[in-house]
Every structure is written in C-alpha cells, then in structure tokens.
Image (cartoon, protein in one colour):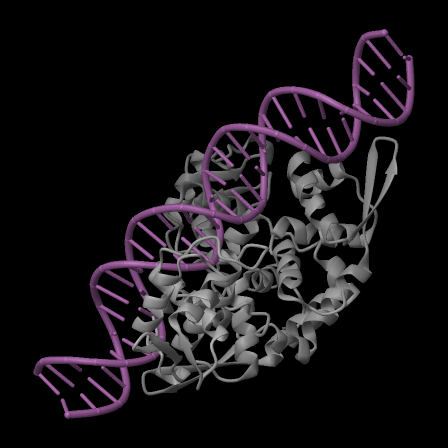
Length: 192
Length: 192
DNA sequence: CATCTATTTAGATGAACATCGACGGATACA
DNA sequence: TGTATCCGTCGATGTTCATCTAAATAGATG
C-alpha cells in the first residue's frame, strides 16, 4: 500500500468496525482456525463466519490453507502493519482532506479501461451524461467541426460515435447545422 | 488508553468507518474548522456535521475552541496515536481473542441477580444446560450426597431444586442410587 | 455412484446508523 | 429588545450491513 487514499482506509476501518471480525482477528492471530471452529468460539453460524472471513480476505489480511474440505485461516500480520503506516504519519493524515474523488470522477474511473477507452456506454442516463460532459473536453469553443472530425474525436473513447453525438446535441453541449458541429457554452448545457 | 480492550477498539473503528468522519479528520488535521465550514466542504448539512463531530469528541479526538457562537474544531493527534499503539503491538492483538466473555459466561451473567441467585430457569434447553453445568461446581467428585443436601446446594441458586436435580441426572452430570447422589466425571456429561 | 462433511452462495429480515428538516438555545449586534 | 448567526437536539426516513435459513458446491469416503 504505497499511499493512503481515503477509499482504502475506509474499507479497512469498515472491516475492523465489527465485533465479530475483531474477535476473528484475535483468534486467527493465535493460530490457524477453521470456519466451524470460529463459528463455535464466536457462537455464530458458519455462513456468518464465512461472510466475515471473505471481508477480511478482500483486504488481504488472511492466509488460507486448504486441507481437504477444511479451510485453515491465519492472520497475515503484515497486512495490518501496512494499514498502520498508511494511517499514522501526519502527512498522510491531512491528505484525507484532499482526495475527494467526486461522484462524477468515480463514474469516469469506473468506466475507463487502462488504455483510456470506455468499457461500455453506461445504461444509466445520468452516468452517460457524465461521460458525455467529460468528452466535451475534446472540443474547443468557437471552432467548427465537420461530422467526420466529430466522429474521429468521439471514437477515441468509444466506437459508437453516432449515439454519443446525438446525445450531446440533446443535452445542448453540441449544436449542428448543415452537418457542421460546434461546441456550445458550458452554462447552456442541460443537466441530468 | 492503558490496554486495548475490544470495546474501546471497536468504538474507535466504528468512528473511523465512515467517509464523512474520515474527511473531517483530514480537514481538522490541517487547521481549525467551524461547523458550517465543514458542512460546506463536505457538502453536508450542519446537523449532520454536528452529529459526526459529537462522535469524534466522544473519543476525545478533537479540541474545540469556542469563539462567540462559532465552534472551532481541530484534531488532537495524540488521540490517534493512543489507538495506534493499542492496536498494533502484537501482544494486544492476540488479546482480542481472550476477552471473550464466552457465550456461556454471558448466559450466566444474564440470569444472575446481584445476590448470586438466578432470576428464573431459562426456557431455552441449551441455556438451562449452561446453568446446570455451572452449578455443578457445588459438587465434588468422589463424595456422596443425600437428597436433602443436594436440594440445599441447588436452592442456593434457585428454589426449584427438583427440576434442576432431575435435569442434571438427565445430562449425566449427577447419578443417583437409593436416594443418594454423586457427581459423574466431566467427560461423561452429555452436551446440549 | 451415494453419502457425509466443511464451506460458500443467495435471499430475507431486522437493527444500526447517516442524513435531513424543523426547531430551540445561545451569542452578537443594531 | 429584536434580529441574525451559529450550533446542537429531536424525530423521521432511507440505506447499509450483520445475521440467519435454505440450498448449492466440492472434497472425502465407502
């Protein structure tokens, strides 16, 4: 864990903010434990324990050794120490204030592949609007774009340029006349 | 914080397991902040921020300076460091396993009045079994008890000695012959 | 293959809690 | 004394999550 972004810390704290999971951590810190052993000690049903173990595994806090049908779990203490360092030096702490990834930024991050193109166009009307707004950075105000150029710009992100173009016009981000397009001022864009 | 009991840690993690509170911590780590300033920065209403600040104050994580009607909050970093030490030293960690008041101990605690007698005999078969096991500490192995003495011992906890006596025999904790009773070895007791 | 055991998945339920609007208390200031 | 500002309390509302039961999976064993 290089630096502590708020989402990572939040996930960690949520995992620890539960008595059952805390006690599981205590138990698997001592020695290997099976699911049913934990269930017995905690007075919970196996599915519940399994659920908690999955949460801890998702944070890479556990090591699992499978022996037949039995799963032996033990603590990976390095996992905890990573979080420890991430949290408690002051520099990282004030950084918690900054990283507000807004909802829109999260939407974009979620649909973006490593190569910078979009996985899909979201089904949700509002998310599609976010991605269209985002793509408007490809257009300068005061310039006129022939349809071929509009398509080329949009296809850098996703092949279905026709849909994106049409919706951009619907939201009044782009205007068209005689197959020539131009960017409208941002304060005239409609909002989702 | 002398040593990390599970309840204290749990309270701390619950406080941190929330994005708004984490971001508040980041903001008040930088400098003093008023409630409305935080509300603005977090895009929340004042009552919500007030609620979160109360949670952090309850853990003694904040310092508040009142200036007229404005409350300036800043982080008390020592607060965080206390929790840090409590958690991440290995000895304390496995200690999380111990404070198990086990389920059985909780059952006993729940049915016990301050004077050491039982409120009632639990309706649940399994809980009644726990309380019978617990009362077996009144009997020594290798000794023989006339019925009158058995009743006297049991009535120290609850007046219905007959029921308890009968069930102890059913669970093979006690054996009887000719109205004389004796304690059976613990590994022969049946379990609920 | 049939069966048993250890675990996981899926879906339902209930409790805890984050957030809000409405209101009230306190301080400052005209 | 009235009014504006800042904050906390209260009650309502919707969401998140811990837990359970039922059922599915998967290895072991006969």
